[in-house]
Length: 126
Image (cartoon, rainbow, N blue to C red; front, side, top):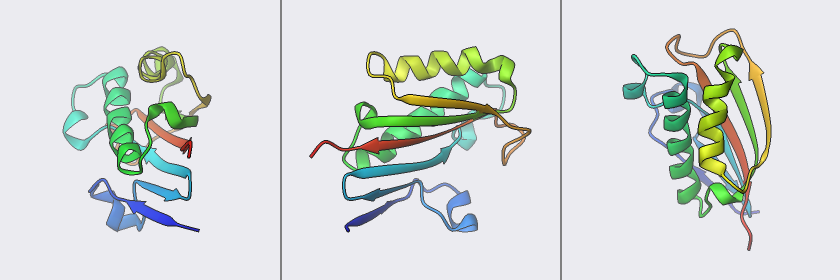
């Protein structure tokens, strides 16, 4: 088994003892990802979802994968009525290659300004 840990430099990584993503052989697991800290104040759920996907895309690239490698997403929102905004960002990112997907409403995320968190699983074609 070959393992590669990928860090995004998030301030939460050392506090909780995790990394943004882990690649094991041809599988990549990306931890729940929210918008960048500087993109939280006054932003819509669509903008936060887009920021989270940008961070996920960077982690996947470091692992040698891309959004086209994603086979599953799990999305957490703090207000289910904003599902449409998240769906727009998700559809824009995955286009004609959509992964299996789950969306769940939660009472809150780690920072009260955060409205959406996304985690993904990818398989790299070798």
